[in-house]
Length: 128
View 1 (cartoon, helix red, strand yellow):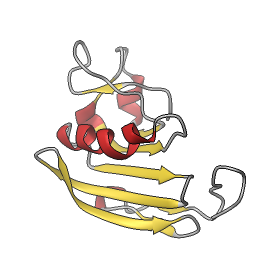
View 2 (cartoon, rainbow, N blue to C red):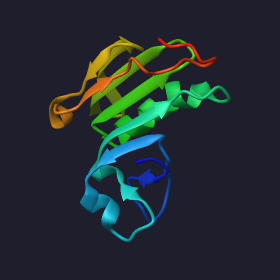
View 3 (cartoon, one colour):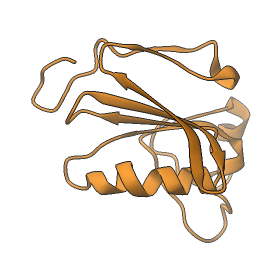
View 4 (cartoon, helix red, strand yellow):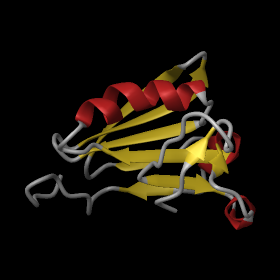
């Protein structure tokens, strides 16, 4: 799902609208302004051309602090993918690099999903 806001406290304070979230259908069915971070299994961000620093440097800290189990960073500038897992005290302890074209295996809580990236395109239209 994309376009949905997430926050540690959905009624006040900071929130983020990730490019993609993975959560339960029940979490999306509730009538509330956004989804609590505690109910999110994965967030993904595609590095933007206009403000890459936010996706690459700021959001990993935010999502780790909010204890989002998986942060997937997709960078069409370089063709890199970084799978961040194991958030502890505002830092992801595991960061596994991949390249466009790789199959990205997700951790245990999402292990039924294998993310094929062979169709991912870099900025400018080229693959991989």
